[in-house]
Length: 395
Figure 1 (cartoon, rainbow, N blue to C red):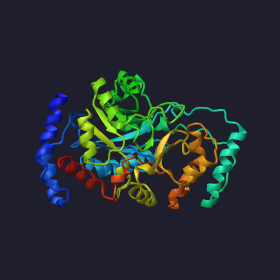
Figure 2 (spheres, rainbow, N blue to C red):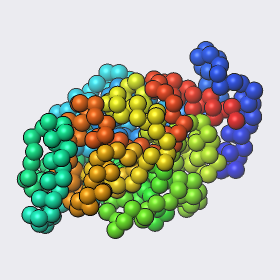
Figure 3 (cartoon, rainbow, N blue to C red):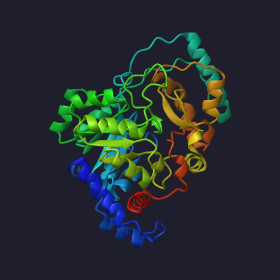
Figure 4 (cartoon, one colour):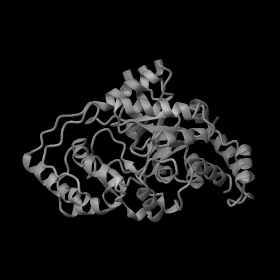
């Protein structure tokens, strides 16, 4: 379908539903959804009902969330990065028990992580980092450390092999440029492959490698900025969602998905008007009943505003948008150095795990995008999707 005609059809649907109130009953919402016909070519490619994809967020996107989103007509995506093989297999098996709908698995293919890179870190640098982190460890009452963070195990490579073996319907890639050999390997196993990018140049690069779908991640997005090498500052790859979507959609023929700051039907409509065939949503699905996120994390999302977010590399060594907390503020104020990608993660992971278990959000990685102003409650994933569709057709 031509882009102009597609947008006209969407607009017709919006006008047709304009008189329906957002406060309608669940039954009425279901009727709206049944009549809406919000379908793009992306839906046929992924075999889903609605052009809504849930981001594969680490420590958030587990089997319950993935299955709930897929069962509601979207595409749920499981986080597979840094997940041990036995755990990943168990989670995939659980998803298959909970749904017979398509789903995806997400991996980070950053150049420094796939495969894990070797770095020269001075003893003085490590001492400064661990000394500062020990302040947080004391607060959490966990063992202090002065050790040099180890090289990460090859868990991402092992996870990719599992994706092939399990013939996962969709392989979702963040922070990485899949080589042509990988794309061909996925295609030969019946796996669709999509890659997330933050610049037009990177979109053209992954397009040359024949990925099936390109995710245009705007600077408003929560979580890691999707570049496959660390830029020299957070100012690079910082293009807004709509300008990036428009540029990429005009430059490539494969479906483009918008990501970044999208939490509701208004965001979906804007993305479609910009040339996208769907949206990828992360932060809105963190604050759901099925999310694996700590309750304190979910509560902070619904209490915060977009101005509470910041870009930082203090958690993993890679730039990511998070909600400011004691961890980000104290780390920055002390001018503590940041270790290379992966090694910073290895240095901080004990703190993050303990903070999550103890519900101490001020020391946790609070990944969140700039759409959090409009997230007001913790809902089921199915209700989130119903609300998005209803709002899309309500003008």
